[in-house]
Amino acid sequence: MDFNKLLNSAEYAFLRTNEHLGNNIIMLGLAGSYSYGTNNENSDIDIRGITLNRKSDLIGMTYFEQYVDDNTDTCIYSFNKIINLLLNCNPNTIELLGLKQEHYLYLNDIGKELINNKKLFLSKRAIQSFGGYASAQLRRLQNALARDSYPQEEKEKHIYNSVKNAMNTFNDRYQEFQEGSLKIYIDESNKTDMKKEIFVDANLKHYPLRDYKNIWAEMNNIVKDYDRAGKRNNKKDDNHLNKHAMHLIRLFMMAIDILEKEEINTYRENEQKLLLSIRNGKYQNSDGSFKEEFYEMIDDYEKRLDYASQNTSLPNEPNIKEIEEFMINVNEKVVSNKI
Figure (tube, rainbow, N blue to C red):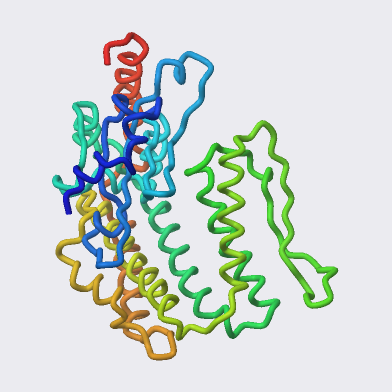
């Protein structure tokens, strides 16, 4: 597929016309299945990128963190936001620094400099970030398998855990809010068909409406997913389950590379066959459950990750000083109109 031709199409005109994007973009790259090497004929094209904060964002009155176009599955992060996400070795963004060369669709000098300095961001924080994402992925898989057979009270616990896991990543992806500003818990229900249900306490002030909308959309989608009728033998559900299973193993692979080799390898060339076999249902039983050998694989990767975590030579924290110098240098050029 000619991705550059696609980016020049009318569908992606926002890349050229939006005031935060255009000449401010420093990087565009493939994301999702195409970037991992696990795409098939049904795979969507996901684009991720980075755009410089404008002068008005840095010393003026405007505020910008990211631009999302749902129609094309495109997300462009602001420079300042991506730096903060990379500091935490956020799996959804650190992978942007480890793409195959041909998967970078646009890269200017600042984008290249960021990639050249990617090791500055690698630290033991990857243990928690990747481990947390892998745990959330496993829970999604377990919850999807369990939701049709569990009684209501048990389902409510699964929903609660799924929403709680999503909430743990909100500050990475949306404007931060103080701990306790958004709280969920299970309590006695007044509904006749429920003994207990999930409640929420929300106390957000001066919070961006769009971020608030997206947070509630994520929580709403989790609840809706559990409320859907249907069994695990539905083909679409099976495809989703196998995709979750594949991404769980892929997260382990990436985390181990970071901890053992200090490398970000987004494209899984050596493990492509294994990952595609998981996606294609090799490890799924006819009733939708997963074979014992898949869970043995998970156990093996968990042990490998634990060993890598205990023996990594990565520092406890990323190189904050050098990252800050790089960040200041770039933003000073923006403020002084040198870019």
